[in-house]
Length: 321
Image (cartoon, rainbow, N blue to C red; front, side, top):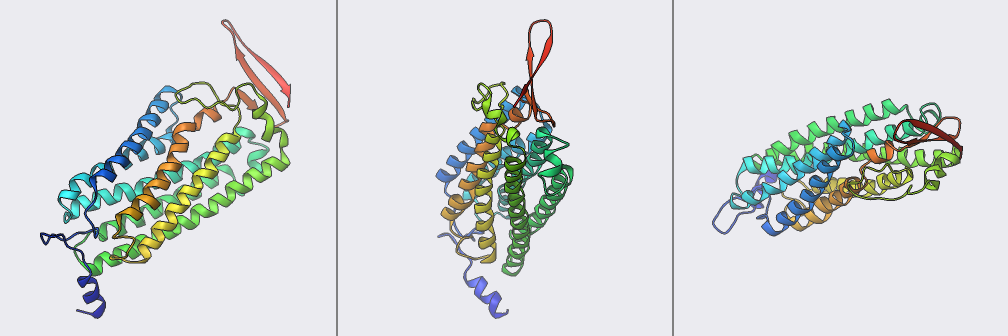
């Protein structure tokens, strides 16, 4: 056995009864229950709004992703009783490690949709770095590739062999780093988009805020929200949580199979679960389709169109913004 293998073998953690601890610690049920409740609330709110307001398929990234997070934390409870179970560890890790990829995909798809909503012939062409469809395809493809890399690394890290587990962490590290670089690039694109809209199309930037109830946020309400900037700022704030989580995961995996962050549960909840919870809660409360289905539609000639319905007909009223 090489010196590196010998050092890794010596540092593998064991319980008092001699059971090997794959994670380096025995998971605490109390923390898992708190995570289950928090992500469970987000999942319930997201699914309810999905069926109540408007069934947009891209929102399945939020509903299914949050549900998978709940399942991941539920599995940590039986894993406490069997901390040497490779199967439970692999499934739990994959749910918790990979579910955030769905939340990143939601951000990627929202930027293009928001640009097209504001003006397919103006905002979408002049305020995005690339075409709306290309931005979504490029970053979602990157998300899928890093998803697969992390899945492969996460599976290898569960194997009861220090050398293989350490290799699995390095593979997962590659996936996490590429994902982090891609998402930070996307965040720059998102900031650039807002800057361009504000400077090139001030009427579109301020238009929604001038409407009655344009900034009212009510959960489970079917009323469209005219001020699209609320969604834009929400996306920016959510980016902070995702970036914090990505940096943590990168540092964690860089320390290897037996690193301090990997084997300390409190850091996992503080720097992974909490930032993800914070970011996902933003989308669950705002629910993006309410902004993109607004009855205040922005036309490319700088005119805002308002649709109003009465009992017998629909009439169109245009106002110069």
